[in-house]
Image 1 (cartoon, helix red, strand yellow):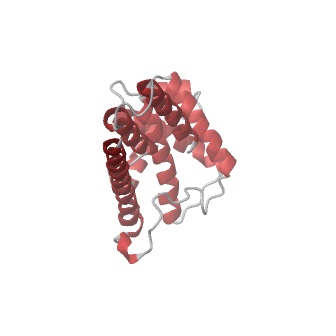
Image 2: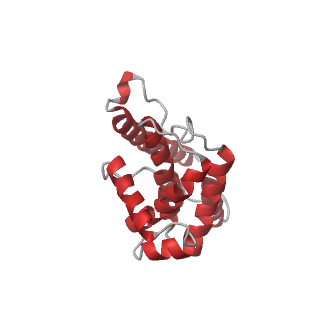
Image 3: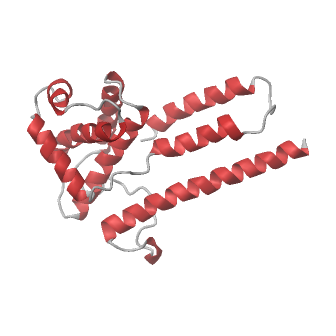
Length: 210
């Protein structure tokens, strides 16, 4: 019993260290990208700045956009991480644009969301979304393929081609992998079944959290 307790303590400590490492990378990325300075100066202590702060984009509209992105990524069989990366593209674009002095409204962000999914799919999926398909099937011809490509180029310039963002899914995967592979055995009856259920529900909650 004592050995199980000690294993649990080490397990929890490992999770905490990984969580801190991922969060530290996110803080550093935000600090260097937005401020050109190291986070030790105290200006960037938040790993996830509010993306709609300073914009005329409502919280409800961003939530609807994120929900719609889930539906699209699921319908077009994108990888799970594609959705989470797309949300990061979307949020970081809003943050960067505001930092550059530009304010967006609700009507401006549809193209941003569409392009975010297209860009994330190109980065993550083996068979990524094509700009023509995105224009015709996802944007329903409201946004031309050339405009999506133009917005994608703006994304890349804005992010300086550094698009390997830490996502909510990366945190989820870390914890899920630890639970499945390194959690002490025989903690309870039907442990594997419960761990799988926890991971499945965890993914649902992770999607809901953003």
